[in-house]
Structures are given as structure tokens and as C-alpha cells.
Length: 147
Image 1 (cartoon, rainbow, N blue to C red):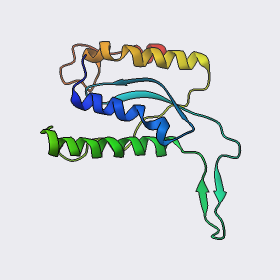
Image 2 (image 1 turned 45 degrees about the horizontal axis):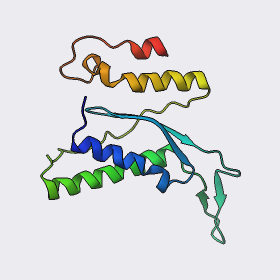
Image 3 (image 1 turned 90 degrees about the horizontal axis):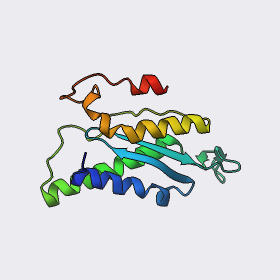
């Protein structure tokens, strides 16, 4: 599977996330025709969580959540895509570029990390089996076998 311009833009913006969030590192990532898979590593920080702000009684978050990171990624790529619609004739999207939510899975050990890396790496060659592919030719049981 080769990436089109939009796929490369999504990949490029994924690579910028550690610059936006200094406690984030990236692992395996793939752009699929209608979704992405990626592993985000959030470094543990001492005292992370909610802390009070000065003189207001409000709280602020020290470390980003997965939701913060994914939300920023979706926002950045949507803005960039719209720019390319206007400036480079990319096809416009109907309602939303990204679905409302996302699937997350906390990776708790090296064995799980290896299985998920394998799933992500094999996903492009298994595209013809994926349920969301309108031209699929069979069933994909890789997720069931790995997890």
C-alpha cells in the first residue's frame, strides 16, 4: 500500500507530536486507507496529574493525557487537510475528517507491546481482510489470534 499526499501529511504531523508534548515518544505507526494505528509512549513525570494553579483554586494538568495528544493530532491534521483542499485541490470531506472517538489500549508489558507492534506492522498487508474495507475479500482474525 502506498501513501497518497493526505497519508504523508498525516504521517508528518504524527512525527511532530513529541515537539508539541515533551513527555511523549512515538513507537510503531501506520497510516491505513481509512484509519491509523500508533503507539504513544508517555514518560512518567514526578508529580504528574492535577495541580492547583496560583491564587485561583483551579487545577491544571502537568502531563498530557492520551486524549490531549490524540485531540491535538486530529485538530492539526484537520486544519492541514483543509488548507490543502483550498491550496492544492485535495478532495473536500463531507462532515468530519476523523471519527468522534478513538480506541486506546494500555500496554502493560513487553510481550503485549511486541504483539501490538506486530499487529500494526502487518495491518497494511491484511487490508483486504479488514471489515471496514468496502472491497474486502475475507475475514481478519489476526486481532483475535494475537489478543
